[in-house]
Length: 302
Image (tube, rainbow, N blue to C red; front, side, top):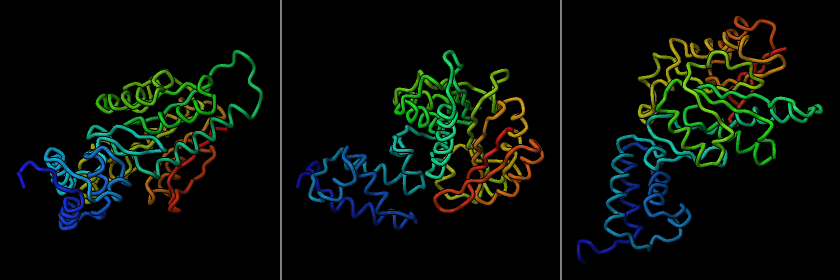
């Protein structure tokens, strides 16, 4: 067979699975199948259904490159350049944290609260739009997913969404995602350390801030080490960014407003204590994710 003759998918895929298994991947078959689908421009179902599919030399070479990157521990999302979140595909690279499934709870809670504000009582003509801010937006996943969900409900015009991040590089990715999902006119992006001065108050605040204790950073899985440390390191006890935002809420959150703040699954007690110190007398609740772990601290201003 000529060196540049197409080979078939089955043997190439099997070899890739074996390589990833040997490298210590937790999901070698899934990783190889997803990356094969990415290289071939098909979905994973097609990979599973057609092991006899011919694979050209160029495609085989690109698959080899993907395998090498995954063997080194690079997350599949970075290799593909995208990650699914809240039913949407988001562009991601090493400038931003990869959106996690548990963070979808932030969107659910914020969406329900926005809908409550908009439908709970009649809104007279000329009422100012509801104001929402997503702090530490990264790829823009939470803000964009919320904007898309509100557009589908016909509520886009009644809500203003601001998304902030300390990293200008991260906001470049967020802009790309806002444009690709056609909500660039609904989501305003700004470089800011938590909140821009003089831009409040807001009716709803969302935030997925870093919450990994600094001492645990070297112990993170290899894949997480490809992500920006700025998006992970939460200081000595993992609560420094949360405390900083909580201290800003008296100025940033409107009366009757609510903040939804993602926390580490083992940080509930510390998060509650921090909220009690910064906003005494405000309402506090913690929402569990689908795994039953404490995931979102809800802080409500009376």
